[in-house]
Length: 450
Picture 1 (cartoon, rainbow, N blue to C red):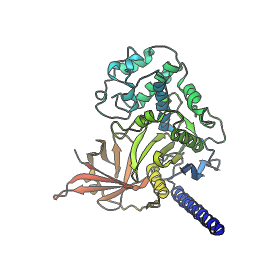
Picture 2 (cartoon, rainbow, N blue to C red; picture 1 turned 120 degrees about the vertical axis):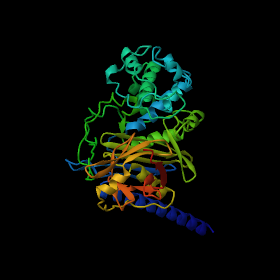
Picture 3 (spheres, one colour; picture 1 turned 30 degrees about the horizontal axis):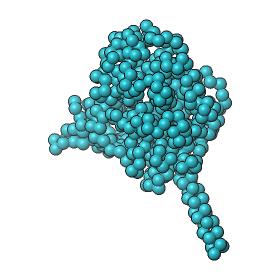
Picture 4 (cartoon, one colour; picture 1 turned 45 degrees about the vertical axis):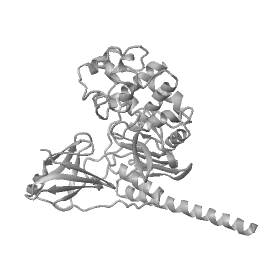
């Protein structure tokens, strides 16, 4: 009987090991497929229930030196930084040094419209403050005053709010810049000193930092971009860390971000009740520094990032202790699609390897019929379709410009993302009335408004 019992255990362990090997092989094959098609270069980490299923680098860390990405490569994580800023704010709330309902005027008495904007508005992008107001290099941080410097008051004074606070949602880096300044007031530290003291050091995130521009390290990735359908080879400038600041200045490794995930899983930084509030969407699926959606019936919490030459994504399913970390040193448009495919493999769901499509040439007279302005039903985003030098291009109100490549007269794909499909719809008279966007398993409509 003991022999049979032991044999059963060994068989079970063999099945588990085979299953993990199979998952690794699928995850690795997927990333190799994206890499060989010049759609990804970077580091990926995928884990479930405390077990790392894949942790590996793909493509070149530096194309000129022919050095390869690996698990030690350092990337700018861009707007994933907002999770760190949000956490510092929530720690201050737990310590009784802040309240989510505190008005901006408490910290900046002369701030225009400060009595109508709360910390919660800043956390959830519902403040109405202009997204593009991000550069804080003129503030000469750190400062230790109880009131805002004249420079920040003057910067916002002449800019009206886009909407009444709390009534709409609009992504605002400026809101997180202000949160960083509030953290400095409450802690007496610079924003990054507060990040280091309260997060990086306790979690032993030894490979994360702030000043990527001046970083000297053999592990530092070079960022790349392309201005056409060719492979990304151009090197953009690196922003000074004071420009993205508390909205997007942190750099690090995938391994460090996994330590971040593990700490969040055990509520080591902020207790569960307040984190549940952070994971609760207010408007447009956004909580306190987290995007909230669902994956295979479970709540997913995430944030992506983009800065010149770099793209990032951190997607978590807390209920299943699933984590997908994607750090790229190229401006890949396939970031979200890669994330969804990796999650599909983890959950044993169908997925597709990336495809490389071939375009057909359409006359300008046909392309001209698609020119106009379209509005996405899901979030109101405006997209202008324009014709430039015989090429049809989509110019969203927020986001990069993309060239549309024709599969036929009605169906197109993006030159830099072959999985992103666009189909135009016509009425009985042949007039274009709508476009449909298919990005993986997500479909959305955008009627033509002019």
